View (cartoon, one colour):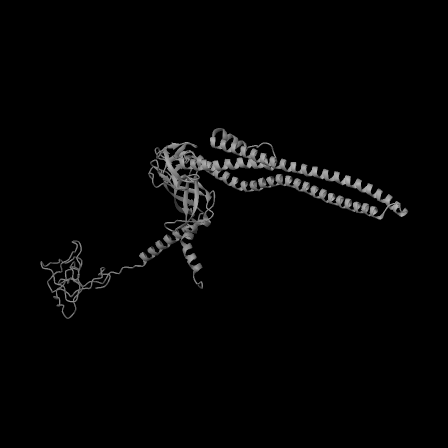
Length: 525
């Protein structure tokens, strides 16, 4: 049997015994005739003249009730055995032929049309590109972290989670007891130094009265200890002034005494000089008389001896006068040195006090600043959340977050995380489509916005170590009004952003991975 007669490709079985029909699913309107049996096994037909219409009418086929057993070596099945022609039937005229050229041509044309149409569409159609980035809704300039730089012990908590506060409202009060004690000690030392400085300035300038600073006098009016300090410095100033005055007066009196001694010496010197003049005159007269022989030689010698003695006495008086005048000069120097030494001591002490006074003044200013921060106040208006203290006497560590404020009067922005490989396609004012996965997707439309800011460098997630660029997206005007009734955008809500990029064809989209691959291929490593 040919392939055309056996379309299922079943192998023909051995011919059935004569007089037996092959069971099979044969339509009633068609009789399948078997091929003629081989010459060795086929019986010879009877030599009877066929009826003229015998060749045109189909011969009846009888069926056996029992199915035929398949021949060894052939496939089993009801239609595998070829039926044997009944006696008197003519042999088949030949196998019918079927051509496959037409279906193949139709298939090739369909494939060509399919690929040609797809190629034309892929090469001419533009598809909008987009960078898909995940992000979340944030408040412009983000949430405000409320911290305390110094920390302390909580005295009173004035807000609760979810409260709405205004700018400047007091949120938490801290206990100021310890700081006030430190401030009292520091300011006591500072006022004492300021009072000392006022006294030393008066001593340096040889003033008759101390001029205290206004801050010291103001503190003295309300603080008895400061008033006592002021009075003590004033008394010390007057005591030191009286002591100096007494020493100067004593030295002045000594100078006057020495001056009187000098006057006495000068008087003695004048008297001796007068005596010397008289003796010289007497000596001249006696020398004249001696030449005349009227006076003896011893008298002349006695006058010369007296003249020499008086001259020596005059010299001693001159030396005593010089010594007295020297003592006067020394005394005057002592008077000057007393005043100068006092001024020098005041200047030296002032220089040392200035550094200490500045140090205490800075400590006092710092303590007052810390006391002014005993009330933690809201820097902006917003809603309180993330409160970390819940009871008085709780301890707040320096710079630890105490609570957070979410501003309500600032626009919402979407912070998207863009992969670094897409950063070259990202720019400011780029159009963005936004989907909010936490809202009902059937009722919530896509909102539109634009990129307003791109981070200058990539960030790295501490937990996943994934690097990304931060892109801030701002909704266009009127977009929030497009939300369905009851829908509300809340900070922290997840967002899927589609940042629009340049258009490209599907063909370019499909070819780009191969182009990138071949651009890296055949490169020497």
